[in-house]
Image (cartoon, rainbow, N blue to C red):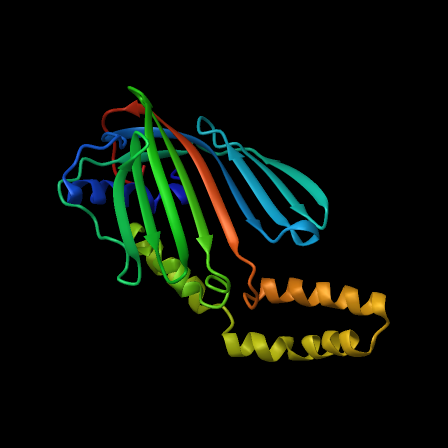
Length: 247
């Protein structure tokens, strides 16, 4: 079972390596088990929202910890199949990132580093070979304030070229079904008016609570300076020299 975060970028890095024509410590063709941890975070202090997911590549078990409002909650989900990925022996590099992204690739710190500046945000990804059959992948993705919330299509553009045609069509359909920006604004207008009235006319403690509520709503709607940051660390272990792409 390919992990969602594992899909687009390995293919992109292989393409960049082929384009640059330089040897790089990227996973060799074959079938891999992927163990890892991903963290999504936004805000700070009382407005911190964080989600940490760890998974066992051998069986797909997931362990999720969420933190919000100063509270922590943990969940465990049993896997249905291993987390794996097939690195093909492709002779033709796949498509690059969309034109709206500016990409750079170079060897760094004994590994391979990709940096992409896109309309929706910024991505950095680095690979290192740990031993003959093991590679480490580290990624940091920062969505620009409002980049993913106000324009989900811009976020999709960062990864769409790495999806299969069926997956890309499904993602576009999901985005098309989302409410429009105008629809969201109309629905939220009465709520914002009530909160702003409390800020203007309420008691000091009520106004302070209303300001925090307004900041949280603006962040959720992509209308503030709050950014979302995703960090990912994976360990890729070679389990076979032959495989079918997508497995």
